[in-house]
Image (cartoon, rainbow, N blue to C red; front, side, top):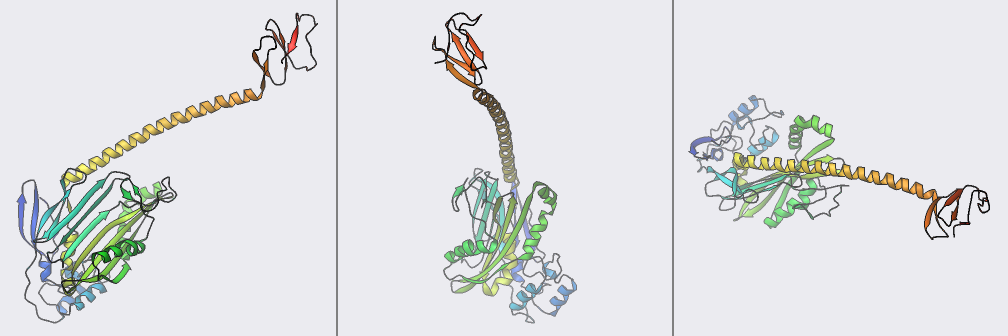
Length: 421
């Protein structure tokens, strides 16, 4: 049975069991709450403030719930939550009539690229909203996986989107001098950018192209996200240090507004980045992206629900096992190929060294000899360079280190002797 973590301000109404899988139907009770309403009584008053400050989570680096003051859904209770609460303008006002809740169910995301249209994941989608998605599994060069989904209301005023990817690469002083913007195994190569550079050069132009009247409200680095992602690497720290790997993160919050149907829409995007360095090679990419949007006058109230939708992805176990098995197979093939190449390379190196030794001996031999022609039969003979050769008609050869030596007429040397031509 699939499950979903339901915030304590939501109420589970029905659960349906389906053979071979499952989905859950939830009422978006978060819509009935709003920033500041910690005790969910429909009003924001001193009772809520007393409750959250008594919880002792204010500006403490610890997880906080809605009831403990986390009204902007970043797992902390800080001044940002108080600002969000008072911006609603509802402090001390009576409860308003309850609005119609959103009813959500889990819908499937299919992997249409790699694994024959299999269900890869399921996400929460409000009734009547559209869902678009893309799953792509690329086993080369580093088994990158890319996934995104976006769900949006019919009037396009509410929506949530999530993307995860490690499919952007940049190389420095590596054997792959590929110019920026070209493809490497299906991936676009980019020079290394920090989060703010990528935001200004890539993300903001996309948002402005999507909405002609898009106006940036703020762009800021989010240190708490960077700290959290860095801490998550602690379990790998010893291995990374041993392997000489360093990893850094960046996180950027982009806030902006635009209009839809005459209403102001607030759009908030969080982009996180990962930079892994080994030697002179940097592997970097957009590690994750979360985007939520809603009418500005309702944004703080519906943000918890929208973030729950954006973070509701449940991987399908069968699909995940398949891709991991595929990863293992590719990894095994790669290791085997590397081993075979190493063996071949070692053999070639040994052969080259052997040839070099033979060649060196030959060179030394050549350097110490000369070739002279027999004046009687015209054949060539190899003669040490420091000696003189005398040839006889019967093929005999006399070698002497005495340049004045002449065998003609000497006892024991019959016939006529000549030096080389």
